[in-house]
Image 1 (tube, rainbow, N blue to C red):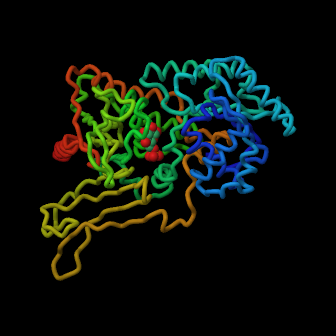
Image 2 (image 1 turned 180 degrees about the vertical axis):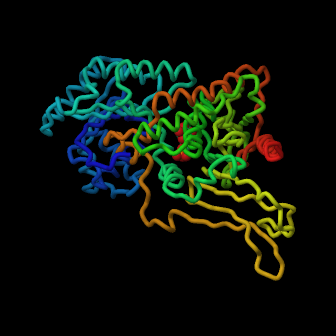
Image 3 (image 1 turned 45 degrees about the horizontal axis):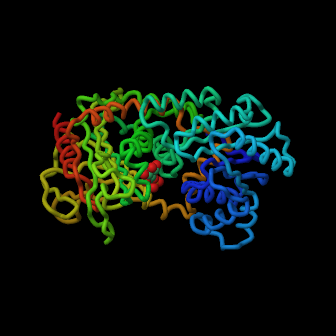
Length: 512
Ligand code: BG6
């Protein structure tokens, strides 16, 4: 990653400014960046959406959102809140109307003039936080209205952040890439995956490539298997319509989880330049053989939650959520086994597991190491002090969220006259060792886009290779007459069939 330079003045246009993401994440992230002095003073934010609204109404909404969602919460009516909201403007418009884009341009030119910014030198960041079906249309309109600068122009830049979902399968992702790249240069497209903005996700690279002790063990000779878990205790949270059309595989695996896998499994990049890192991610994702349609049930288990209790709260069946079809077979849980067929990882299974309405929120990568070649010790206990016939393998856990930290489980001699071994954890927690609050994922990523650093954004080929991987699974599932979907009670760890699948699979692999 290039060293941090000071952000240049820029206008940020948020399409989809009335949406939840704008209110909960984007505006709070921009506020924090201003507060931390990371953005240039001449920052202008323009919200664009269909709803009729004045600048003043938009500012009131922004202030309310910041009081509720900002990381460092400002006082209602405070000066810092007013100063920030006075840089925010609103443009009502339709995503397919040339007139709306013309009006937006007029507004931006006027704001530029007031701030003394020559339009030939105006930097613009467009954030597409709209439903995906209008992404291409917006970019086409931006092109027609003359917003897109030459990527080689040294005086100004245009960048476009594209939110997920980036397509709903390989074909639609391919079409979207094609239509965006007919107007924008790849260097101007910033496909966002907010997991890459998380400090602990970036720490996977720091942990692996900034230290020498684990990397020599990071391969098939020492690692028996890897688990990547993204458990959520939330349900569909009012997004039933979107979610039912998507499911856990598209919503979490194709993007966030494959990104985690790529960071865990990739080769060290030659440098931290954006393309050096992304080349390695593409290489490792390309080394995963896509699951064939006919083999889908041998490597995946999907589930759907039924009524249960989470934190004392009664959760209804998924099928009773607003926006969900009453006979839906959409998966709210998926467990998968993937292999990375390369020199480093051949034969090491990677188990991915994610679901909604589970017992707790937990994102963790667990690297389980092989057993020592000889079982020298006969007195072994487990964590509960019960006798065991074999030692629990060493396990390294990278805890992404919450209680961010790292844990290494090792066998220790229990003090006393006998040689009895028991597994104990060496642990560190971020909150104990760093007394700064980490920036939110969107803060980091929006700042990177303004600075022109695309390392933590997804490149065109990366999106396509990730879709190639999940396409076979989607096709396999879609071709089943009787879908193999396992119900699980909300508030549990998912369907029993998933545990069984993973345990049996590990037994087979370890026995090999
Ligand atoms: C989003 C998904 O991309 O990530 C949501 O659409 C999910 O369904 C969310 O809840 C999880 O993000 P986080 O940061 O809360 O782990």
